[in-house]
Amino acid sequence: MTYSIGEVAKKLNLSIPTLRYYDREGLIPFIERSDNGTRVFKESDIELLNIIQCLKSSGMAIKDIKIFIEWCAEGDTTLQQRYDLFTEQKAVVEKQMEELQQTMDLINHKCHYYKTALEAGTEDIHKKDKIGNNVF
Image (tube, rainbow, N blue to C red):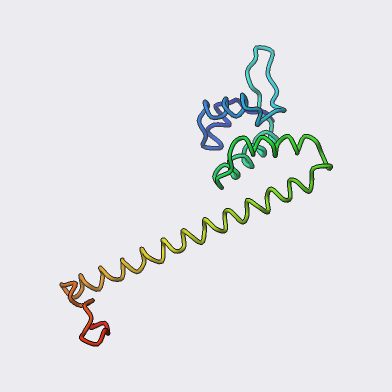
């Protein structure tokens, strides 16, 4: 089965200009064209675009994604490089998740703080007594 650029854009929630940009940058090197020059996407192109979107959303630069795609085209001789790339990106995402968890912890704390204050009708409920204990 083949898809038009519009169908792929809709299917992957990407803009048509983004898909054209990826093509110009060499990120989808095996894309075929019809006799009139229109891009024709196959399932394998969509799978590759999913990987590109995953790497991009994890913070990887386009130039690094392009290197990954070049390694894929080179075959088994680059398996170690590709494994290392994903291992490094996994560490990046784990760090991002840690930072987001810290952010969520603070937001949860402040939600609890304000809910308690609203229920009491005052923030004074969170004031400390003379020896530093929360007064509830």
